[in-house]
Image (cartoon, rainbow, N blue to C red; front, side):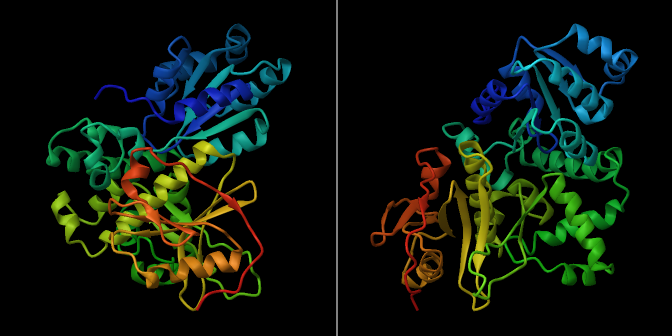
Length: 401
């Protein structure tokens, strides 16, 4: 498919104006290399997954960096760990911005090297698969929910081809990528756990239950979840703790981040099957959570994303925060919203002293439910028509019943 300009392109340029080096990281096949090649066409490009490229640089890394002081891309930089310490020396010698771009998939050495060698010298951009706003106005937009956002999926036309690609992606990730990244664990067990997560997608995570089903310890399950989260395959959305006197849920919620992988691992083969799937509402919730978290990443510096839930069962699906402001968001697939649907949202707003809340829903209408709650149609977010409004806390009022 032709190149679709990514919403991350502007942030890439902003980071290049701010830092001497930029790291673009994200899951395999999400479009990192394409983004960099298309947005930085005049830059030198070195693919470190190619043995020949690695050998050239290893032969005289210091000499290469001496001769190439700017506008250089190192793709899959984690394949050359010694690059990071070498770059630190050259970045410290000159203060100019936008000299190097590194891309990489999840790897313990990548994160460790950045934090140890290049802290303060590198801006970090997390790239996700296509979001809905990026596909708005294209023929791919209606397919985004079911098939997910990986660019190669949308380059294929037949459902059978797309399922084959997703199957190959999962298999390669488990059997080739993870061992290459230094992880040693059973691909079969990890695939089974990943599949089990499709049945608790959008739920509060209970590692003990998963461990019992897998026949392993909860420590093993947590280690596997760390790997899946570090590789951008799942999201553990943490609970919000503002009121220490209130009994709040302490466990995270879990989501399979890409809905195409969610549906494939759950055994769905066509969009029509999603219509009757028992987890359809949870799938929609995950879609909206991922989209809004991605929008927050583009707009704010280190945005805060969490959920709110009391032991009594009052819940808000997503809290997005930045600069001391918070926006509580409830997600509803259906268009019919009544006061019972707003109970958790209003309790959260009262508890946290917030003047504004959103209900994102699957219907077409946009209006206010009172002065403090706004009904926002999902399609307005998916098309990029709305932005995230954040309001600072006001004086807390008594929670509603």
